[in-house]
Image (cartoon, rainbow, N blue to C red):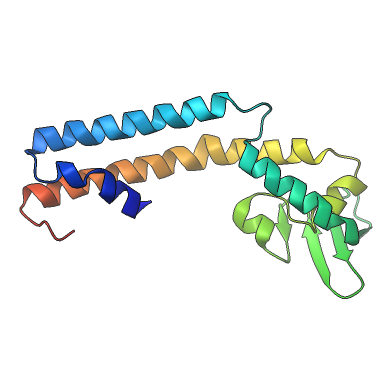
Length: 162
């Protein structure tokens, strides 16, 4: 992301600070509009790239068997494929494989647990992704905006080796 941003403002770096600021503002605005237009073409609640990952994980989940641990909420499971075994907690959204913890997208070990409870994988993922895109993504965009402001200060100070 940083390399792409630096490449985008390469022509603006030699400009006066106001022109640099306006150029960065224009770049960000155009990028946000392009991303919004791309999302408008999507059908459903989940973007196409995430949907492809989910379908891939669903196919991989075929070899895994979920075993309920007997808790009243039906959230603790162990998942096995005869050679490996992982522990899954649906309430805490954790899997011992840690892919679900890191990405927020249920891995092949979590999907059999979701199916065991009779839930739709799509609804579970939408709940997680709405949390991510309502809270995490705006803060990331703010961080990039702050980074750009700091970059502008360095450029104004004459430090062009950023």
